[in-house]
Length: 247
Image (spheres, rainbow, N blue to C red):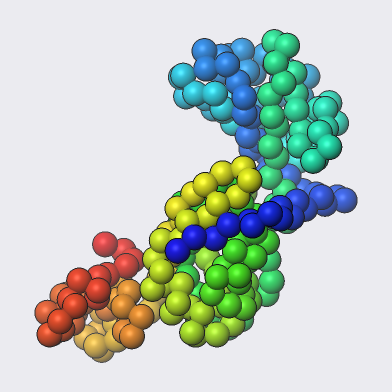
């Protein structure tokens, strides 16, 4: 299954008073540009740490605070579409900050595992609102989206999505892989049942569960031993009862 922007652009959120992650993406760098040169380029923005892999045309910089990120953005050129650009050795490099407000959309209801899926392999610029639009367009009404972040409150490429209706939840799980096509990127994202920790095994063996059966007619929590028993008891389509969780 594929989702496409179909001629319209996913909304860009322009927060009046955003709180930014200290981690900032820098794109369009010369491949031979190293971390030391990158730190030197941003020396007017306070203490800077750079993360760049050799041969890559992008990197991350870690600034001291939200205020230092705002200071950097104030020194950037702004395109008509709202993108930020910073000149490095006469080259316009793109500066992509992450507003922490973009990590969450909606209000979570009751237990996180109610009609909740895990979404993996998200593009780094995908906001919670973008995920909501994509999931709702393909599967039905969404209640809540939470983008997972690292210690800098920067997206790590995954999220959880809570649907309003169980039918939407099952439909997303059945698709498993959704191809997302936007004006800026194409990406296959992964859709799986969300595994919640500290749930007792459904076979009442006394153990805590470590996996959930991903078959949409099952979705029960098991310890690993009980899941093996459960899977062996399936007369057909055993492969559809694969475990998701703490393997």
